Length: 253
Ligand code: ARG
Ligand code: ZN
Ligand code: CA
Image (cartoon, rainbow, N blue to C red; front, side, top):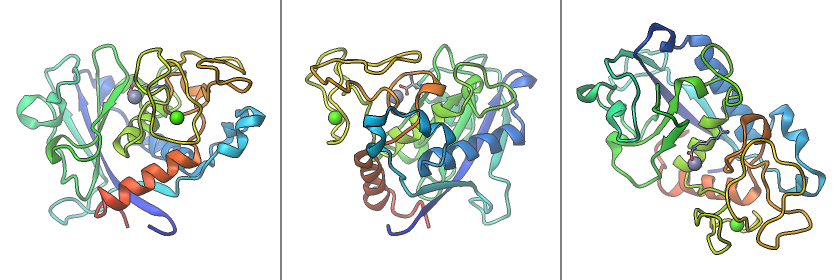
């Protein structure tokens, strides 16, 4: 695509306790974070260490709550479902009415985001090319948006940024080979990195002989706290843009 790709989103709120039925304002806060992070207008991008600043990229991808539903009727882009399930796992049960969740909207036209209580993890995504009825991302209620149920240190909406990175074909920045140096994220401008970083690392954090600058731990595809992940690279942006063009061509306008 040229210019900007705008992606319609449906948020399926699946709640067990009333507090988990997150507000429209909390949903709006998440959409705002996505638009800032994917366009590199997030103010905290200024925390990127100097040597890494040339890598910061605007992915030219934006998100908005769907205004037309699958049946053509106006919608606010949110579905709300009460469930008997106390906490979901990554088995996709949240993605169907029949298993205590909410059915996906057509994945060729909507990015499906499920928000639900997850059993001890922040979220998960389906990579491009998978089955339509489970396509999208799942975010735990306490890691969604920046208000309401969002809980530190995962209360800046970055779990959705990370998971949508996967949904648009990005791998973890350390290459998913444990702490070894042979894995790759298939992106040329990210430094080779041993394993995931956690918390809020100091600069430089060196692994796999990647000094003097070391790991790009400020990247959304690492495992650091929300406040520490603040950027995609040009290579990652190109990979996400290519995914939209090649695999998800009807998703955006
Ligand atoms: N562990 C999750 C995954 O691999 C998400 C990690 C998100 N990190 C964060 N700081 N929000 O998909
Ligand atoms: Zn991940
Ligand atoms: Ca790399």
